[in-house]
Amino acid sequence: MPSTKRLGALAGVAVLFLSACAGPGENGSDTVPRDDPAPPPPEVSGPLPPPLRADPLWAAPFSSEPKATESMFIGVVQEREGGAVEFLGVDHTGRTRWSTERDPECTGFVITRDPRDGSELVVLLDKEKDPDGGFLATRTTASAFRPDDGELVWGPANVPGTLVGPGLVFAAIQGSVMSDHTGPKVALHTGTGAVTADEHEDEVILHEYHGVVLVHRDEALRAVDSTGADLWDHTDLEIPEELDASDVRVGYGPRPADDSAAAVTLVWSAASGNEDDEGAPLLYTVHDLRTGDRLLTLAPDRRPRSLDLGHGRTAVLGAPAEDPDTSSVQAVTDEGHVPLWRHDVGQDTRMRGAAGATLYLDDADTHQALDVRTGSVEQEWEGHAEPPAAALESGPALVEVTTADESRVFAALPVG
Image (tube, rainbow, N blue to C red; front, side, top):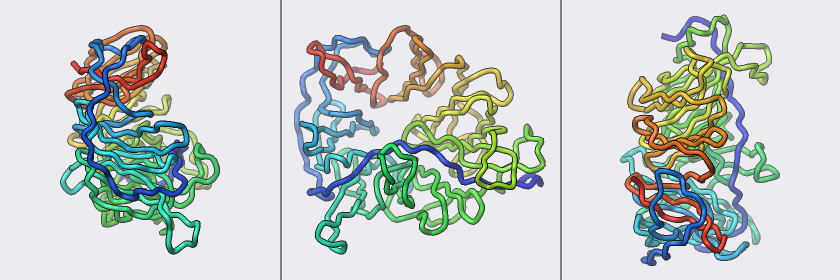
């Protein structure tokens, strides 16, 4: 039952790291089936992150960091600066299975799932001529494709601008592409491309994950489904017993370090007369986005960081409320109320990223590779080595490496 203490809600503000999208595209939603063989493996001169020690299998054709689905790598290739950009779907053997051309500045993309059947989708942006807007007018669109074969699932759907996240959230950028100021945002349903939340409708969009959107609307923090119906709001949340204040409020906390996550971090602060003044954090809590169930309670001493581990799992780095002098990484899941595991770390430890079944941490010159399923340390080493950019759970992993001729490429290495 909710506490009888008065509880207010804050919308929350987060700095956005954005991918620009400008200029008209030519190919719209078309993809081209391909069957290009894998490029030959490179000669690697730099160190590799443990436990990846084998010789490279092949070189990936990507020009920038790719993402992994269950069975494919998705990323872009650009032969020359300012030239055309192609998105590629590359399988575990290194063969390119499909491609689609986009404008050179339309490089933002996201891997998501259709909440109706759990199937994976890759959502790409494009710019198209706008016949209703005049001779030079363009419109930004988003389209979703099946990663295995590039089949169009939905789109193109009009969006106000680039992908800003977390999740399938879009907005026009005001000024620099690294600005935290955007125009009104919209969130799309991951399975259909329909608008599920729109900031023109007097709401603030905070977080989207697989069809569920966290918004601030009608003075309440709400999780809504694809129809706009409430799943829960902040008055359903029990105020943590660690808080003694008679008046507290809760807002959206730090956003995930990657695209999105099944768990959301909320921040609790003392209520004040100024709604724009969030105040110093009193406590952080981590909740299942779909149900609102509290999964973790964290002390305010360390600003938490979260990272998607796939399959509804989220890694959270913070200070447990019951042990505030200790930093730890804990894994939570949307299938239970008890953390899967806890791994205590140093105060300076960072989560570098997750690839496949491995979570990478570093602390100055010390690095760890953790099994995301158990939290056990697979490997610990000193010295520099870049973690994989992406990995399939059964392998391979793609790691950006230095070759013998001092160029940088993504090398495929076996996992395990």
